Length: 217
Image (cartoon, rainbow, N blue to C red):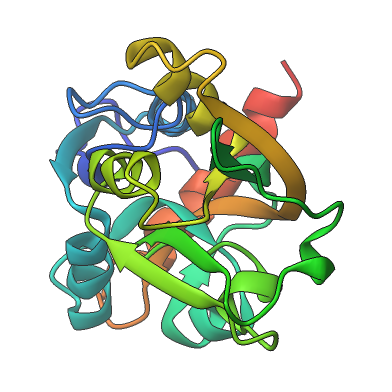
């Protein structure tokens, strides 16, 4: 049974810099999809924007019910609860600076001396997260820091999801400067629910119903 329309609603914690999925103003295609799914079940969603790593900590401690754009991996499945179907599947590539090409055809050709820029708290799939090659992965707080490091040749490449790379190229006028290299892994992104918050299962079931309805529209 649906919740009543006057349900007090919930707070969706969304990151502050993962366009087009989540923007600093609380908009984004992931956030909107979650809002629409809950609305079909009579639940109002309030967006709270925070850095991604902080959102994960809030979920782990039970100080938040749900956060968006979390990859379902072996590690995160131990930490969080997830709904049935992913919000989106996102593809990644290694992007290099135009005057310092990354001369490889596949990610497997990268070697342990390759310096890769990434973001703190993000999951990029097994190749990066397990890092069996032994890449020099340097994680920072935001994409702007990584772009500065890449343009000054302090990194060999950035691992970026393609939609995000497109936004960075457009907003920073990086056409013909930030160049797409070999593909990385694809990941499925979800809303993650706290394992310790007492209301998580209730809202997880509601979101599953809402997403099913939304997909069938």
